[in-house]
Image 1 (tube, rainbow, N blue to C red):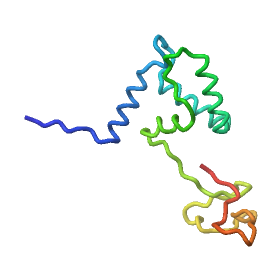
Image 2 (image 1 turned 60 degrees about the vertical axis):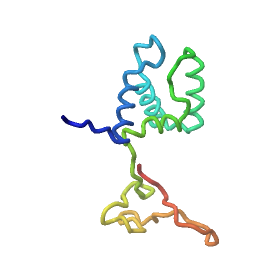
Image 3 (image 1 turned 90 degrees about the vertical axis):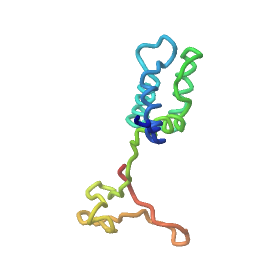
Image 4 (image 1 turned 180 degrees about the vertical axis):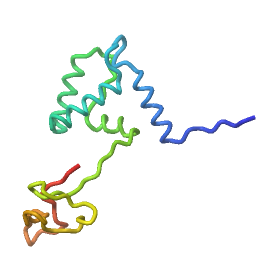
Length: 139
């Protein structure tokens, strides 16, 4: 007799996400699932460079046009939390203002660009506390 092992938390969350892929956006909806709608909304936020406030207002309006039994996420926070089991995070890397160099690998500790000579960091007030802020970042 083989004992069945219970799935770990990560696997359980992933199975919930798979279930959401089959869950209609509302009863009778055949074109979108909860997962597909959330993915498309987050893609629009990224592609159109929407702020969180604009994204949330768009969701509010969309929900007001849908039946009461809709399953759409309520806001940006909920959308990110819903998609978290996929593990689609990102890394941030400092880049020079003209995008001529990326601070990565052997260049990770450099302060000035090898090509244009510009500084990696924004000028800061000498009386301010805290670390330097990069001019630009790539995600």
